[in-house]
Length: 179
Image (cartoon, rainbow, N blue to C red; front, side, top):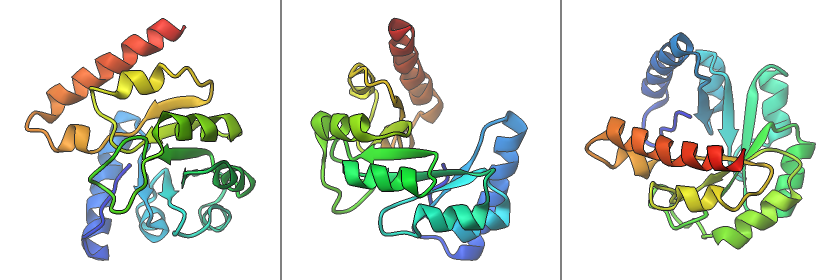
């Protein structure tokens, strides 16, 4: 997912186009956070929206059936609405406190569990997830909890590649133990 909260639209679009090219050449889908206009303009694979953004049904109408749509949800009711509106997955959190989003209430494991059990869609845990807690999130063993999203765990670090490998190793150990 490509997230840019402070850039001007033109700057964001140019960076998104470059990211789309890199991701396509590697076979990795790229979603744009919040900005349907940028996702359309750079032909991204989809978009992720929050509760205060454009509703998922409207995003689906604009992007069409072939794109991926994710919706941030904190409650079972929001998860149900995301499903009804045509989302493909939900992001649930913040599971832990995070510095990437202001005024983001922490749900903890119980909040994540409640939303996962109510959701008809795959769930990605979001918010404050890092190498120290990612394994415990996935060890909850919830059938539709398909992964974690990380920002600070990687990009607030000096050695992004090493941190990425470490986090991947932690998550892969958990995936093997669940199969």
